Length: 612
Image (cartoon, rainbow, N blue to C red; front, side, top):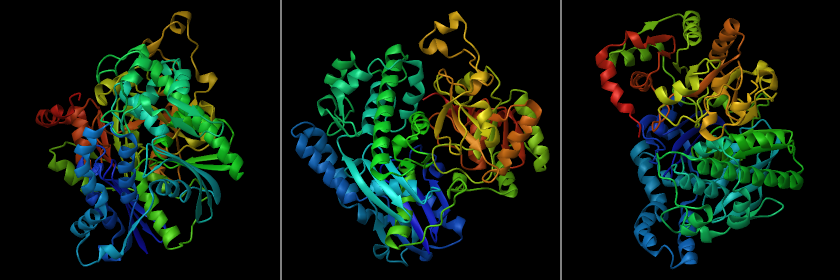
């Protein structure tokens, strides 16, 4: 039985295909269209999923959409009535779009399905709808390695729900309690994302990365004025400070007065104020998450917790939750945002609609390492690269590994494209840029000359699972880069008095450990543990690097530049390689060196990656 899950029309559209409840393929639409956070109907992702499975549209028993559009329309309409006459002009301008995209979304979906999958099937008989937070909960629990678990989903908003506490037992999910719009921890965080000058729905991770440069001096102000937090973690937002319910911006003049000025202009200089604001909203988010976790642990008595929803991508908060020992085990869905809703919707179709049996994979989980996207044969790689006028050499795999290790030791930044593409926002050694973490200059080089992004942004380590406890204050599994932990004290460098006195961005260029390229200013790192069972080739590469250097990890950042989706195809990888200061590109066993490429190739692609 094949079931197709779809998320679309907000941001991060995606598709996922199940066969008898097992994940066959999943991918975001942006990877194919090259439009970051593409919200369009995921026809390219759907076509990929069917191709990967080798099936046709006729084989699909059900298509499951990840939320209920009519309920979302109801929420939008009731919200405007509740806040009237505020935002009446935006209401008038938005209503025609809502009617088209929400009220009649079922008709729109059926039209898209017919165009993408053909008219030989009556899709109206096969189309199902899940609720938004149920899709998140399903994506968190069903692939987890737990027979039973508490489930916590937190995001901006679904139909009405912004936070859901549930429990999973076998193949069943039971919702225990919910928090409804406009009271939203995700939208509170997005409001501070907007106020500190970053883009909502994509810049929240920048706020998280900026937070360690500041102090949470505004945390009490947030809790006193913006929200009331109860002992069980439930909360209410004072909407007099915000415009997101019915306006065109996140915050208003009252918010600006409380925090001492207008929002930072995008791309303008960051000040200590923005750093302190980031630290403050991060601290409040962590406090609320811990209270919610304690409450659901007490009410369910479960020792396992599953997380999903956009706020579950806050790996700093996840790390604090993991260390709190409220639960014995914490598992986070790697595609925790709306893209993962496609997976959750398909799983709801299998387990809830069809009462399908659940197969629990106790060794890590059943996500297959999140390597669920397209892969390319050597012949396909060579053909694509030749069409790009690329110059390359094809090696045997063992020779390729040695070539890459030598380049890494020589301080080269390497584009690494191997096997099936990752599902979710993290690169996990399939579509990654890799480098030597021991280099004190690598963070700056990658941010400014390769990624073309803000200099304060930290990088993650990919470390062999068997050595993680030697280097970090952590001894567990973190295969999806969803937890932040501290670097071990014996690997840290002691700061001198002058360095200790620095604050803000001045802290950036100080080497803080034996692996400075992956050590953030607070001695933390966003860890990816690498397992031979899910990515044998990446494990072999890091193992060989360890044999040469006694360092069992690599810098791992996503293979893209600012404003671009992560690369999918060999030609995507070549375009990124030529448009940046990457030194080497490795696609399968095909190796490209920058110095071997023609000047014409460089001129074609170099202009594509100017700062936006």
